[in-house]
Length: 358
Image 1: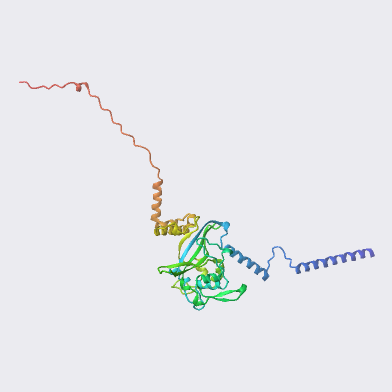
Image 2 (image 1 turned 30 degrees about the horizontal axis):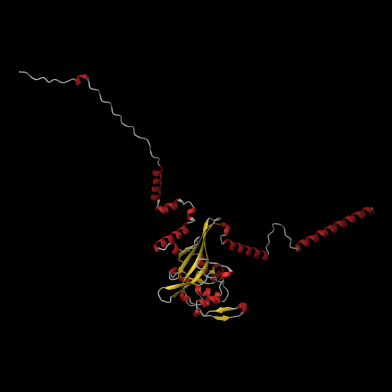
């Protein structure tokens, strides 16, 4: 009996020790943050981490990767600020209620060292450290008054509002990149760089001479463009667009003066005649605007809209049937003339005339 009691007590002690070990292991797993596979994580830190990943994904998807670019065209345009669609880049000339025009934004950030600019090369733009320009060199080259501020690595330059030559920057050069995305089969347009152009009278008068100042990459300029709003037409004075929207939505009106080519020639060099140059520019613009449309089969409604309705569609179908009708190569049987009857022997003899005799 004593032996059985000892065995029972020993088994009870072992079960209590095992239960205590399982309880401690459960507490340890809970405190260490181990979760079941597939469990939902509702912590704020996890939600913030997911949000950051989503934002990075959206930023990456906004551009076409080089591997997905099936077709690409680089176009150089000149934006004349005298044209109405481009007036938003020129006005206001003076600072009004803290609102600045595009050139003031560029010049102030460039002079203070916040914005990087690159040297303007005739036909070959190089956005590398080797061609990075110093603000003081640009200010002295174009005779823009400035004052020094800071020293050493934090040295910067300040240009007074009245000394910024906004009234002389009358045009811009931009570089457009047209890409056909292989994954979506759609054409996308992005502005890669921008160059302000000074218009100043020559030494002997006449027309103004254009002086391109420097190139600025749009990626570096975008943070400052996103914080500045403007209105794009005189009918609606609400500032609903930013300067970044102005370029992203292609609200400007620019003339093509060059496309990237092997010989690195401008449109004026390739087409000296103004009429030929205008036709070439229109042809390039039309191809860019309709490139993705040519990859899709038009619907019946689109065909009717182009042809002028149902009658045009029916006429086109009738014309197609007329052209598709096989030509008949059968010939009518030729008429065979009946052979002439041979003359009889009686008819062939000589005829005698009988005269009356008295």
